[in-house]
Length: 370
Length: 99
Ligand SMILES: Cc1cc2nc3c(=O)[nH]c(=O)nc-3n(C[C@H](O)[C@H](O)[C@H](O)COP(=O)(O)OP(=O)(O)OC[C@H]3O[C@@H](n4cnc5c(N)ncnc54)[C@H](O)[C@@H]3O)c2cc1C
Ligand code: FES
Image 1 (tube, each protein chain N blue to C red):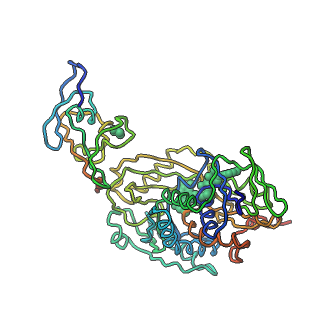
Image 2: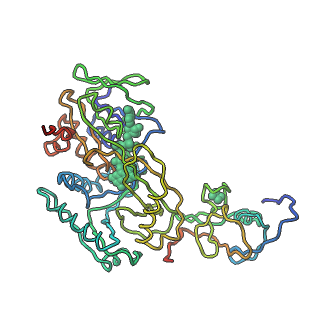
Image 3: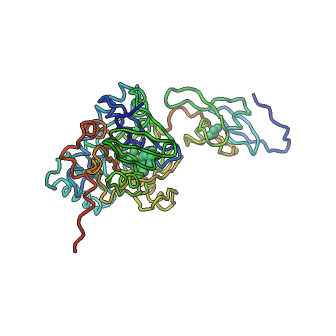
């Protein structure tokens, strides 16, 4: 099959792009690595999170909020096409604070975030201990208060990943694992993509290779200087549902396990779980919800986030090789709906919308002061 | 279901399962003690309430969950049987309770 578009990378970002393109009738080829690949998509915390996004770039706040607004429709589409319920829920989310200083800092942060010119007004409430306890009866005495935003939610991200692959299969997307791309050439208005598996050609390409984008982007005149940022997660045994809202760092999955996370460290490609970090995470979680103290942790893992220099997504079309797009971000669960339903149609139409121009990788090339 | 290998020296240990008095040997895990007493089901799944019992006997499958002395979701195959243990069926999901 000759594809119209080749998507490089079959994680959440590439799968969402492939899905969005296939829905519009494009013939799509996805080239991915094998099972041993570093994939943030199978190790994440599964939040569809909005309240703290976009300090320094209000457009990112709006983009995240926009995605969260479309998430319910997106989940319904996937359920209809695949029969898989990805368990999207949007009861609102809490950022719990364990001291007065934290409470003050968080409150000031969200005020400044929303005071940025052009920032969307995302609803939120500042709650004291009693206010939080009304919604989360199991909090401990150390919880001083919280920021609650009804815009936040969560999902089962492994089911999401699976649903996307099933939906893509049904729509005729060709998925080829064990196809590491080593070279891309643009020629005759199209692209020749090569690796030790052979080669593929298409008129358009989407670079969605997560951390691999740093290497691939320069091959087609794009910039994606992403680096790994380590995140660690703990999960407990499955227990009866008691947390009916997600927190930024604690959530109970639909299957009953309580996840605790999600540290941000600068640790290169080292994905070994380190004790001090997870003990701090567990300690905070137990102060937030003392009943966690008696539960068994059954697994811990760590994985690499895909981080750009300023933490915001990179979306761009190449100037020197038109038809080549790069799509990369560190919150691919939250942004899944936006990628599939907003960004993919723009790629299909051949041009990214003006309001996304702020996300171009060109922003990392501010001329050096003399 | 299972028959013990001859092991005359091991001390007998008494315990209860869902209130019924039973005996097994020192060195048995809780899961082994149940199996040796012909008890093949020890929990009901949280999703559908289906009966399940010890399977892998090495800590991987979580099929052997029981409540031991009031603490739920313990892996019977990883806990050594002690004199007087009160073992109960793990019926559905464990409830997290404040300490
Ligand atoms: C601990 C942790 C917690 C997180 N929590 C959240 C959260 O709560 N909410 C949220 O929205 N996001 C969260 N994220 C981020 C989210 O998981 C990622 O944004 C998302 O999974 C990134 O998807 P991706 O497809 O870009 O990258 P990946 O999943 O890494 O996929 C990239 C794919 O590209 C392939 N690839 C790479 N190079 C090549 C090449 N040369 N040729 C072919 N294929 C290639 C790889 O094999 C891989 O399959 C979290 C991440 C981590 C690590
Ligand atoms: S029998 Fe498998 S974990 Fe105990």
